[in-house]
Length: 365
Ligand SMILES: *Cc1c(COP(=O)(O)O)cnc(C)c1O
Image (cartoon, rainbow, N blue to C red):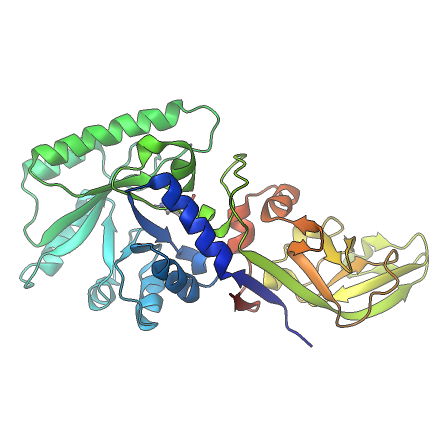
């Protein structure tokens, strides 16, 4: 029996990186590979993207950065989510570049690395409207007036766009104005760090947001934020499982926990080797659809931890071991992460990052 797998197309990944290059032109590319490369497998995806021209990698946490270093990846790695109390020794040992989101983190780190041979490269995070991590313009001015600490090297100044996928561009343009003002302050202090603010939505919609470097995540995996439609991207991941057993359900008989599905007609059910522990959300109970033998079969009853049932009455040839596509293409039909997200009232990001560790990642050339 083949296990439940997520097949990753490396050609599609490279194609999407070239779509970033095509749009962001001379700006450097930091490929965002946090959250296990959005569920695609951090190490193989990072290797493929670096080989195809990405210069840097972005992760959320120190542990994610350590995983890449342990795998032998030497490219610069930016740890973007701050909060490394207790992780500073690992950050330094593994040569990870921290994003500093507050005056306090600048001071603590400057003190911690004082006396090292070379200043530690860091990126400063500015809050230009996201209302999350980052210094305000006033804090940046205060920091630079007080003199930038000599134990740190300001390698980058960054911010994050909150609404770049909105139809209304006002909020983004406002953030860009703020960001430029900060860059001006930094320049007046005699420094020339790498400026970066654009994720996928910025790459796709706001050329003025590209600055020295872009930080695409989602679009590398073939999807776009919000309602943006970009049909030149290719989804990278195909999520497959298989039929464990086929069984007949008599009219009146219930299926799965709680008996939420009751057969009204003689029904053929296929039991699939996928469950919510794999990231196939329980919210798809009596809602989801899968591709099987060239057709679309609906989920019946509750999605269980390890198993899910679908109605294959219309597909009498279905048998144990048949391949089932949960996300991706089978023949001329496809299910996208956006389709699943719409059904679940979420976004493609959550679908992809939710694919669990039990699902075996397989890489295809
Ligand atoms: C996750 C993340 C990105 C990538 O965003 P996408 O919308 O997936 O392109 C960029 N920058 C930061 C700081 C992030 O946390």
